[in-house]
Image 1 (cartoon, helix red, strand yellow):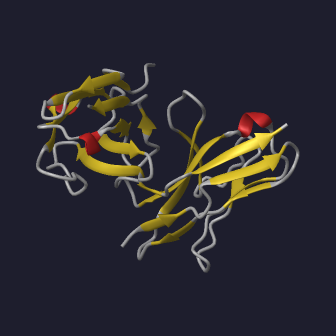
Image 2 (spheres, each protein chain N blue to C red):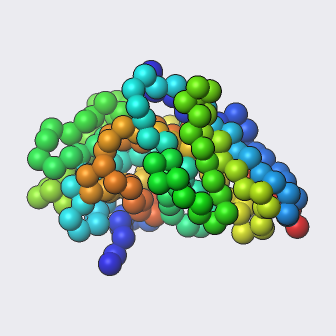
Length: 112
Length: 108
């Protein structure tokens, strides 16, 4: 079946604008994760959803970042008032239980 | 605190030579260790995990709890092994903690 999909694949925005990044996990996967991949920092955890539990937001770098997961499926990561240091590739992953995390292709965000 | 260290940013080896990508971790519980690989213009994918004790594409990794290491090894490197390799740990279905990655370049 289809893997994890993300949209858009690329996003260029101006400093101060808000952006929304979308993730469609693999159907039936209960856990959904957002990571950020940037030069020099590697892969950093942002936020994690597991079933109907409250999300683990401990990795969000500031209150400009938020995420939702509607109906236990699609997730949206929102970055408000974007800054140049937000430029990175944002990766989404999903898993079923404690099994392998499957990654999407990522959204490359460039903040000018 | 959980931490994964990959000391080499770049590792270059000749085709047919052995390769070892180093990974050390610090964690107080009983983590599960993984190696993920990202080939050029492809998504991040799981290469192997320590509990499965498999050999994937000729790669193996042994968890050494005494040395808190999980080094990735292959006896004979191939050009198609050139990629970015990330060591990671988690416990159960918690988020992965990644190292900063090692870029492996296999020279023909």
